[in-house]
Image (cartoon, rainbow, N blue to C red; front, side, top):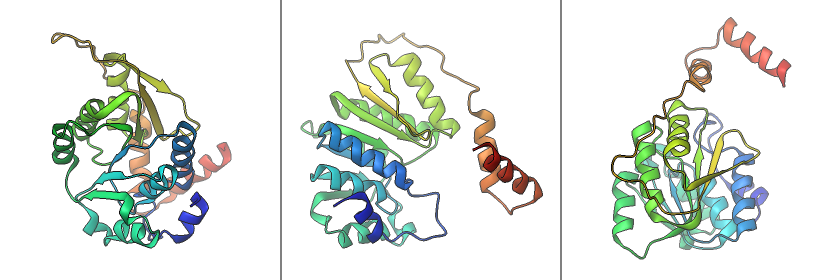
Length: 231
């Protein structure tokens, strides 16, 4: 099944443009998994199953996803997977990633080639997801972060850059993704630490929050017009 075929079937409320990945992002994931021939995949966050469906279509293998808020999305993620005929390729946990990822690690035989982190976007939640993703990834496996406009994600990226040298950043054509490949083992001793605080994206994060919350006003309309002119 192709991305176009998937998108024609997916049911996603028109008023919710923030929850699902963009079609260009879903296409990137699909193409990347196809190109690298990756099979063992894991995802934190699920929503309407847009990313999950593209992952399953690309790998034709079992995909694991966890999200405690499926009822908030009227169970449309699970319904979409059923409509796409992918139910047998999904192992879904209706629970928080901080419960599921440690449990998967304890199973010992669970290892993954690709992990997509797109669940809890608070910094501590993302850091916990990355910590366990690192333990669950095979050597030369990949971890993909979504929503790089957010301060929490930018700080995690900075932490990886300064403290996890065994992760190589892979450039992508999409600004809202950060892709890393695990190239070695963590050899830090217990005293190792490098400061990773950054001011980068501070303005962008707050500006996007301002633009996407509350009612539209003349300032927001002017900023949107300016954005269109600068494209």
